[in-house]
Structures are given as structure tokens and as C-alpha cells.
Length: 248
Image (cartoon, rainbow, N blue to C red; front, side, top):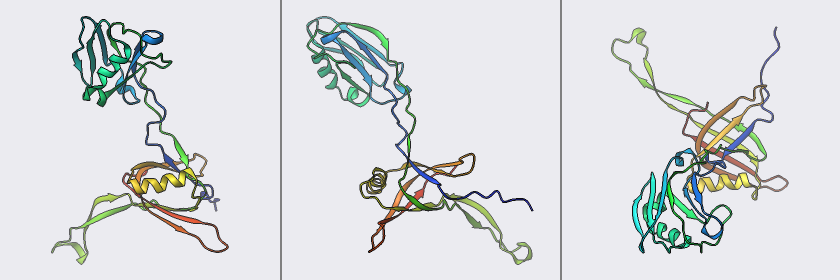
């Protein structure tokens, strides 16, 4: 008889993601030196901010807006306008606040220098972040996920052998529950508690102990946390997560 190839459950890891943003970087255009330095950036990390056009002309004595949109920033600044005044002007525009931000650069001056012109220049440097997963501390046991397929009864008067007939319908990805040594100050336990309070959907991973470290990835909501304390026993937490995606 061949030896069993069953996998031990010992050491199975349950991991929680950081919402997928990781570090990443934001696309930007920066020019000028010292106190003339200004940087205009896309408001979120990721490649989506690359290739947006930035134009600042310097002319006359009043500010003028050519375009402030999701794809471009184009203004005319007075010849005497400082970087600080240009930044303040940009923030008066609600569309700018929605898609952009502006500051005095990665190694900033104080914004007191007179702005210099910038011909049409595309933003660059935006990179998508990689989601970081952290192992939930001191997990003792895990149950699930318990996926279920709902069935539709299609029995009719001519069904064979007086037997009910069924067709598969929607799939419920189920729940996963796990017990932990509850650590009130641990970051991963606090995060689970806050996610339930804030109704935050989070990405999770269940990492098995087979040679390939097979991983089930899914998203879900924390639906219950039960904390138990008793004399001569450790604090225990029982957590349930409702899956809203198929674990794969």
C-alpha cells in the first residue's frame, strides 16, 4: 500500500493584505531649484498617473487657467508669482484637489522663489504598489473555507424514477473561521477588530504547508470576533470572515 501524501495542518498561515497599494510611487513633474522648486503630482500611486501633461506659462500680472482636468494641468502665472502663490492658486480648483497635489519638491525649498515656466511635460515615475500580506499572529486552528453551490429544484411530473432533479445555481464562497491566542495590542488583531468596525473589505491568503506552499487567495469581511477569558487560561479570540470571492 502506498504511503499517504496527506498534508499536515500544523503551521498553516493565515495572512491579511494591506489593500493592495503597497509602497508604489506617484507620477510627477518637478522643476526649478532651491526656493523656486515646484512639484505637481498625480494624487495616487500607480502607473495610471503617468503621461498627464503639465504646462505652466509665465506672463502678465494675473493668473489664468487653460486646463485643469484628470489628464492635464495648464495655467498661466503672473511674472512675479512665487512658487507658494502658484501652489495656493492650484488648490483653489476642486478638480485639481481631486486628481493632483502640489508642493515644493522632494527636497523642498521654501516656495519663496519666483516660478519659472514649464513647457508641456508629461508626468512620469508612477509605479503600482505590490500588496503586502502579514501573517495573523498566533493562530491556533482554522476552519474553512466551506464553499457551497446552491441548487435549483427542477423536478417535474415526468421526472424519471420519481426522483427530484436539480441544477446548480449560484456559488456561495462560504466563510473561514479561526481561533487565536488573543493579543489585545497586536497589530494584526487590532486590524481585524478595526476592519469589522469599519466594514472594510480586505484581501486574505491561506498558506498551506505542502511542499509547494499552496496558497488560497480571497477577499472578505470580518463578520464576528468573540473574545474569551477564563481563570488559568489564555485569552482566546474566535474570528469569522465572510468570503466575497472564490478562493483560488
